Amino acid sequence: MQKLLRFYESSAIRYSGTYCGTELLKFEKTIYEAIIILLFICICMSCSTESHQVSVIGQEVSDSFVRVDEKCVDGLYCIEECYLRDSLLACIDRCDSCVFHAYDLNRNSILFFFGSKGQGPADFIFPFFLSNIKNDMPLQVYDVGLGRFKSLTIEKDSFKLVGSADMPKQLIGSPNLLKVRGGYAGSFDTGLDGLFFMCPEGEKGLEWVEAPKSLGDYTSGLHLRNRLTVNDSLRCLVVGMYYYNKLFLYDFEKELCKEVQIGKEEIHPDIRSGEVKDNSVVCCADIQSTQEKIYVLLQNRKIGDRKVSSAYSKILVFDWDLNYEKTYNLPRTAFAIRVDEDNRFLIYLSKDMEDECVIGRCFLK
Image (cartoon, rainbow, N blue to C red; front, side):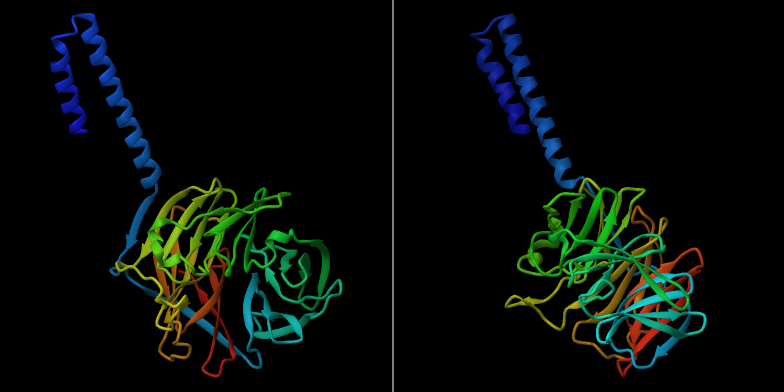
């Protein structure tokens, strides 16, 4: 800008001897307008690259331990995720011949099993829960093995399949798929197309969002394994990163609104020869939300540390502006969470030292 001003002054002096009166004023006005336009362009470029807010949560935040009720469920080794509705927990088992297990939190016991493996109308191959903010019935699942959406109701002693429909082919394979207003949002653990995608209803293509520049070159050639949660009424979603201590808030127009770093030091994976090494830290293992809050599960372990008796996870709580509120410490490493804010408790899935499933319920303050 100083060069532009010096150019303007020297030009005015140079031409003052040849231009007279009105001509000199026209020239000065032209130079002035050019400077204003350049200033406007610089400001716009700055806004387009630095428009989102960035904040850091330091280590000085105080942790809170919560009252926990745990139950080890004998014989279950492959529980991967769950769906919570009041005191009923539906768990997906990847090893058993029956895919789903209905668990009663009040009795601390499994009520029944359902969902045989197969290709029949009521069968399943590799289902996931279709993430929703509110824990309602019918329960929505999508089966990437069958390429179908399925709706089912679960009662205290039975289940019923109430609907089935083909999945759009471009969505098959997503381990983290959310129903949003007007379509779907999700991510893939494999593939390098972007941070997450939006898929409008009826469209055959995916609208990808590129990874933010703050992730640097670490995303190159790497499966991000990020997880999303959505708030349909606010028209925004939050992305939690598996290998990075970062959260990203986006609106439904796919604009990055805010970025939060958890901890003063940046965490990123150790990548060598295209592989993530065992000394890399697992950050956001799961992310869930209600209409009011966001719950982020930090595993707080290295990939190679699968059995550490003293390890424990943290749950960080945010509002929908990604303002940090509090931290809960769990007594062990958890790999999945579900929250029931109406009844003020949160469910987490873990494993004991013999790899049997542990279902924990912590009571929120």
